[in-house]
Figure (cartoon, rainbow, N blue to C red):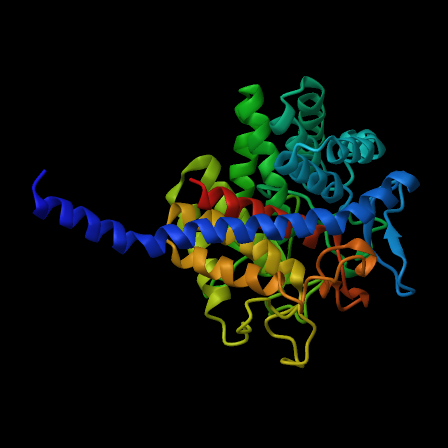
Length: 399
């Protein structure tokens, strides 16, 4: 080989050294963050196993807030987090914790009075099946999908979110409320189609996604929280909020659900309109005048007391996880934003010190600000999506 080509190769290698160093260093940082998650959640795992219960948050008195049966929409996040830690560590104790938690909720797979079966069963049994391949987990996932699709209305083109009678929002006079969160339940239906070969689940998911795209969003890419439909005609009756600052405001976690939801829809369909829409939502979030420099949004983008309004680490974690996936279909600008959010969440301002925070990882999340429920507390789904985001980042760096 002549000197000139060799010289060119050496120059190229030297040029690439910072890139190689960044990739390796980024991987090591992520592994370190995941180790911190594992160490912190070990205390919560021990408590959950001893109590045979599922942790959700912290009470006002500072104790673990356990999920009270018979039903809670967040009950799948803890076993899902345990499955992710098992996948990363291959430590059987996390598998045992996941299985123990799932035994407490398996009988909910046939519930037809709520829409959150995707949150519950795709994030727990779905992960269990994808990691282990065991048929028992697949059966539960299919059963839950069959229960969920009973809530689909052809005239509306959506899966009903909340039943009206006896619901916590019963006084609102809704007939067929659909919340933006419901996009997240579609992932289980896509999975059900993939593992059964039955397109029914997929078709319902696509119809729901399309109807939501048409009716839930404003021209700027922001989303309403609740759209109420006439179940007979499918006409929109109202567009309001249940957990945001105002009907016309942009509730932060709702925007996060929307971003994650349409990115996920593109993953399963490869329909360009979903990818374009996910980018539109991402750009609304990232370029909003009230989006904080640290990347963790206030609980509502239009809260009246910004910058004193509470932050929502759960929304930040969901956004980070969604942006990592979105970057794989578009470009690295979203990956940089995701890493910025993760760096913030991994810092002392949001990550609890070892042994504190009742062994939850993240601090400063908001569940339902208008009702004063779980404001500025840890939440099991904040830790779930933070763990997922770190795992996705690690996979991204090792591709």
